[in-house]
Length: 163
Image (cartoon, rainbow, N blue to C red):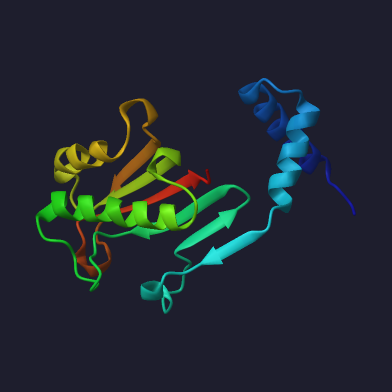
């Protein structure tokens, strides 16, 4: 195997970042990075998305990467109640996927929120914040979009740790 100098720098920089963040020696952080890189990848699709070109959730090691969720009910229709109703249903859908994969909302580390209209930010946020503990809010990014599937008002994706 041939390793280029730029790859060495990347590994060392990554290990130093892990070491600094976790107060562990760099060698131990490199071992953790190797373990994560070698972790099996598991792909899972819900019945409703089995015909769509993406996995519902992907597990790598102890991390779950959820595809974006909409506020749809069991029949595939958007929840009523505008942005508040859709946000509530979206987070309930996320909660269900997390729990069926050995995690929970308490273990979400990052969310990305996509809004059809940024003017609905405050109303979405008032529902969103009720799903997470105040001292365990995940990191979050949000942006407006020119359109979401099913003409939804909100779509949320997240990354979580398995308990």
